[in-house]
Image 1 (cartoon, rainbow, N blue to C red):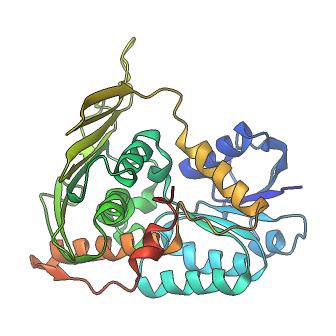
Image 2 (cartoon, one colour; image 1 turned 30 degrees about the horizontal axis):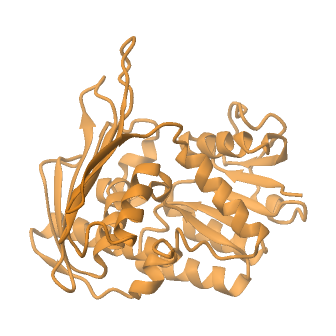
Length: 342
């Protein structure tokens, strides 16, 4: 029987709880661990609020922990959970430094437990369709990838605005898009980034070994009422493809956008995506990995570390105005995992 504890009680904790509940595990969420207990989580009706993480880790019934706490707390909590033999779903970013990320990776390896970094973008259907088209050779060799991520000011948590705790926009927010660039283009070797303000707009250019280039536009301060949007476009030797997402605006009758399109040597196509629930798909995949004692090849720890390498280089580039070189500590195969397996 799967018994779950959630660390945190903010937006992502509620999102994880909702996903567990959709899979039929609402009553299996036994604990919400947080320093300051608050209102009960709607999708965890039987959960007990506790302030002591040791009490959660000592409970032999708990075999899964969703860690949704501020990023600066990830190393301590994740490593303690792994050493206690718990399977861990850890929200991105994995950590704020490469050193801490490697410590978490090593603790996971030593524990024998299943750990997955919640890089939820890999579970959006539109991003999956692009991955499939690249895998199947429809675009040929990928030469360039462009991503964008635009949102309102993230005032849902005060800690997020402290870069010493969150890493700021390029570490907490843009890391999704850097992960996608890495996935399609391989090993990053240099990063240049410029920012208009702390929240952006930020333009990041990533150079890749072998000649590929990626670009990301990030902005976390759009006008209130403007819906969250994200996009990705890939250009290859045989064609191009892209995915556009926009949440529904808070206007009566407004609809969102969820469209994937491809144009290539064999023609063009466009499709509307329906029924997309990436957070639940992510949790379901993680649970399947636990059941089959299989490491999560669709979202590897190594890919999370490589995305963090780019994020930290972008942050350094913004601070110094310089092009920052990267010597990645992650091999291409480890970062890609099984996402391109047939």
